[in-house]
Length: 408
Image (tube, rainbow, N blue to C red; front, side, top):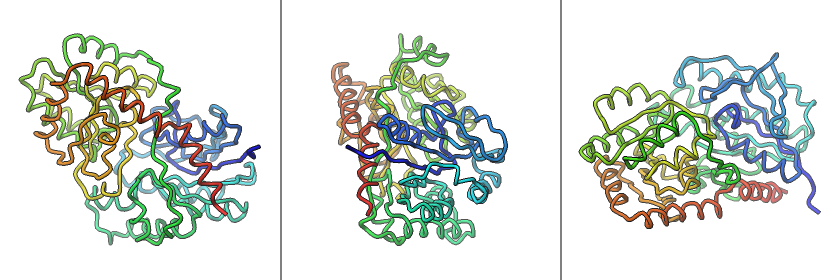
């Protein structure tokens, strides 16, 4: 009989379906709870991607969400995602954890630090030694490499040097290094990780929670879909998401009156996107919607788009959550990312556009729209089947258990 375990996840940006992204920690913890294990998440009370802030009282607030024990650490608000305020929170969170009443928690078997940010690895390391627990460092995005590559910041910047110190410390002291990036192992080794520590556990989708919930945006898309084929993007409007290239593709295809490009989400790039799209009749931009509405929104689309700006950063692999949302909806996908990890080709559910150029994205759209409905349905179902076999949180949670059990 399998022994019941207790997992402690530390991630200052961990959210829930009720508060907004980041979702990964919630879904893994939710599966562990279903399997009879205990899961505890320590997160910050403020993150710019939260759609609803948790209610807090005092410095540390306990809340039980779907059987998961959450502890919200009271954090200051900041004005923008790229601001001094946000930068300061990277260090405020671990400083506040020094005062956290960790003795009030059930003794964990495994402590997981999910980053970025990853500065709280020091807190986790100290606690894991006190408890005699296993320590896993989970890399969802390679910091500070992402900041250097996409933010055009010098590797010798003082903040980068500090983050690099914590990164190397994490690789050294962790018992395992889990990443959503399949090709990142060699990079981690170059930063001091022992090769045997690496484990690949990708992002996923809770395939049991794909009810079609209607909302204002999905109702509008229902009307649009009656007369037009919809190319859709859902998610963050960030500089890394290659949205300008998709918008330029819309400009190239604006003479096709049967086609509408739809953007759903929010982020620092939204204002610029709206300004550039102002005179394009084939582009519609909606603000953010509750996650539960996304499956129905995607059902009204013909093609889904996921992109990332061209960078050698993605040579380490990619695992965009929105890609798995698209595959779960059974829709063909255009993946404009320069990476060897071409998931849409492995799943046979779309077209990879590694050049990331607008004219090539437009060409891929034409190719997909030239196919018969049955062919597009087959591609969509290929993606759904691949997702269920490789990216359901039910199966990923069990792989995580195996990784934790392999630690001596």
